[in-house]
Each structure stands twice: as C-alpha cells, then as structure tokens.
Amino acid sequence: MPTRRLSIVLAEDSLLLREGLASILDRAGHEVRDQVGDADTLLAVVRKDPPDVVITDVRMPPGHSDEGLRAAAAIRAERPTMGILVLSQYVADAYLSTLLETTTGGIGYLLKDRVGHVAEFLESLDRVAGGGTVVDPEVVRQLLARRRNDGPLSALTPRELEVLALMAEGRVNGAIAEQLVVSEAAVRKHVGNIFAKLQLDDGLDRRVSAVLTYLRG
Image (tube, rainbow, N blue to C red):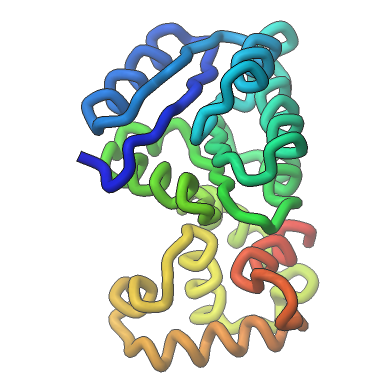
C-alpha cells in the first residue's frame, strides 16, 4: 500500500492504456476518481472536483497534437500545487521545456514505456504528489546526448553530466552516490560544480533550474 492514498484524474484517449493504468493505480491503493478521453473533459472534471494528481497524455482529441499538455498547463496555472504527471509516446523537447517552465515542483514527464516498469512508475507518481519534479531517465539521456556540446553544458565534465541526468530523474544525492558507486561527499561536490558552472543563484530550486538551463539550450 502507498504511504498516501491519492485521488487521481486519468486522461488518456486510448481505452486500453487508460484501463491498464487505472488497474495499476487501483492495485497500488490509489483512487482513480475519473477517467476521461479528451482534454476538454479533463479540464471540466478537475475544475468541478480537484484531485490530488492529474495523469494526462500529451496528445489527445480533437487534434491529437498537444491538447493534453495545454490542459495540464491550464490546470497548473489555476492550481499551482496540484501534481501533474504527463505521459508522452516520444521524446519531445518543446513539450518538456514547456512543462518544466514552472519550478514550483509537483511536475512529472514520463515516456509511456515507463508505465511497464510499475514500481518506477508508482515511485514517480509519489514524488510528483509530494511536490517533486521527475523527468523520465530515457528523456534525459537522449536530450543530454543531443545537447552536451551546446551552450553552458559544454563546461560540464562527463561525470557532471551523469550527475545532472540523475538529478533530473528526481534522485537525491544519496541515491546518486549509490547509482554511481561514489561517496555522497563526491556527489555534493559535483552538484556544487554544476550549479557554479551554470551560474545558478541560491534563490531558486537549483536542481530543477539546472535541468531547465540545459533544456533551454
């Protein structure tokens, strides 16, 4: 059972995937309060009775472009503390940059393939519900590979890029140290170097800002 039972609105136009997600969430002890298949209905049910978390696809009817993402942005503007977990079929820079423009937390962006890794998916959901920011590991890897020689990221060492990727996944220093098989003190040093090289001040959530700096390229 989860540490916290969440009320969830699930927006996905594929009935098969929507039912599969609902089943996973129900077995995990959460309440899927509403299941919808388009962005307009998503906005309506959230405004009528706000849940703890919204899980939405990026592409939804009627245009199957970015309706789900735009609905998520509208919900976020109206309710800044509500958790939003966006699912996408593909790695899309514009979608991810738009989603993470807020640094208030409670935001997640996962590829749909991640749902098959049930434990990781549920852990990401818990992080988002708790105010954390989660980006799919594969998204981070692909985007870092595309941009590692561009802009301010060119100043980072390969190890610092690894640490940045793990930060973007929402991992704390201890978890990063365990993954890289180094000391937590070493991770703190790398994180400090990243903040310094990207010229991030103390007034923001610098872990999220570091990822945003990279995404804005």
